[in-house]
Image (cartoon, rainbow, N blue to C red):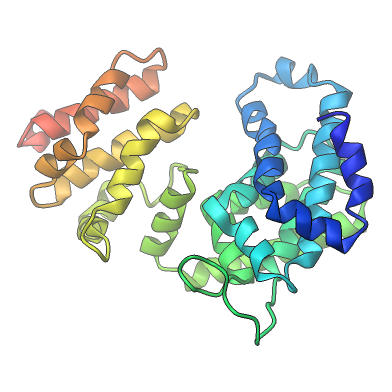
Length: 304
């Protein structure tokens, strides 16, 4: 990576190279490399200080290449689809902004996010996503909300930056995110968050929310897609908080959806949650134990 990224920066000067790189899965590859940011998020403060200059420089160079590619978004539906796929690119950039390894990395990551949030496709261009839906700035802004960028941007607004471009990007993203958030229903916010895999404690992970929205978990096709995603997060997420929230949500679904216990068991939730009861993280252990209890006990309120 240390050898490739400087060469890639040079190659990115040519539009033809950008398109070839994207066709070869370049956006996905760079997004995975940037996931170093998500690992750093859970480091202790002393460990973060040990992150070498070389690592920070690599993050900067990869993000810089991503930034160059974002200038092709308005012209290429295929590149927009690459950036939107699995929310991987947005997720990696949001993690970088949240971790903030260096100001120069934050600056270029924010510039990427601004370009994504302000995408305006050519009206005559055919849609390239699998669903046939148009991918535009609203699509990416919704992904950013789901990945928790609003919280990170609020923190950045409290910092005193000397770079006027960085301040302008923070201000623009703050407005875009809050305007988009107002237009989304609480259910849409929750759905986007679960699909992104970036679960964060908030008003969508409460008893009141599931009392109101438990039936929405059926999905439009009646396949309980979001329940399946939550169950997948139990074993696939490396973030222990995400797994704990998934346990809570599954437990609340079981409580408030008719026959929710049978559905959760049929989809394999019980076995995966039970495995987490012996996890070394006490918070995750507690939520796993409560989730199993909700699956097993019919009158949870009496136990609670």
